Length: 102
Image (tube, rainbow, N blue to C red; front, top):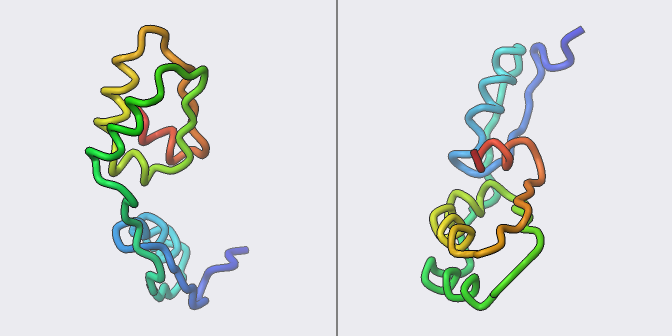
């Protein structure tokens, strides 16, 4: 039984982050209303982020919680990781974040 068939579904994900979910729901027969209620923006500049990373001289694990972090700061994280003599374990929370790391 398809619980989404002929049901109206409200999707509140930000612009640019809802397309896959909307398509899946529509394929299941849902009428999708997209009402983005959030906007994901970085709280610091790339320069500030890079400076903060540089102040961390070593770490054992690097955990990335959100693919949005990678969207904004992927190159800075890669440069930092590459600069370390001893590489920390690189961990991701969630499948989407893990996929964005590859």
